[in-house]
Length: 268
Image (tube, rainbow, N blue to C red; front, side):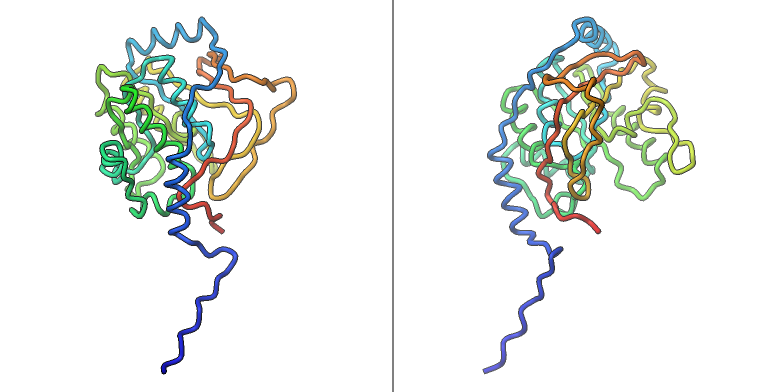
């Protein structure tokens, strides 16, 4: 009898992909997407309705990996009548997501899902699009991320193009990381950069933009991270939506929680 091969050595950072798949699928089935009880500033909401009638688009900046992001998107769909959702997902996900919406089956093992650790893809997002579709509120899902190895600025130019080419008379909510939705040049890494939002604004000068403000809590981006707690004067027990002095729409979330992502292992 031949000796058995040695058992693989399991380290603290080893990953059980099948367990991650089961956890992710189960979470999609169990997550309940719901409206967040939100105090909408009346004038701000009316302004956005007026702007959407012309632009058909709202850019929304998020911090990836927050459980409540999906509920915020659902809340905004219910309030403002969006019918298209554009997510910062790779184009390879389009067919996977469309099949999920048709059959409920998710190909977790496609690399763009299985290996995703940054919080752009969460179980909540799949529960969200399933519910929006079931309730007749989602006419189209658009995956607009650019998967090429282009530099940051070219990457954002291409993402803007992917959003613009999919615009129609159906109002769209486009959600991306907060740096990408800025409508003016930004500086990081010692250089000036031109984000997606700026490129969209060159074509749609009146496009409204917004961002989610997280007052406290945690998020998943290559591991669990803490939000810097805002001053006590900024704390609120209820979510708020308003237009700030710099013409940015803000959705203020009192507390954030970690989302369930396909690859929860911290990348070292």
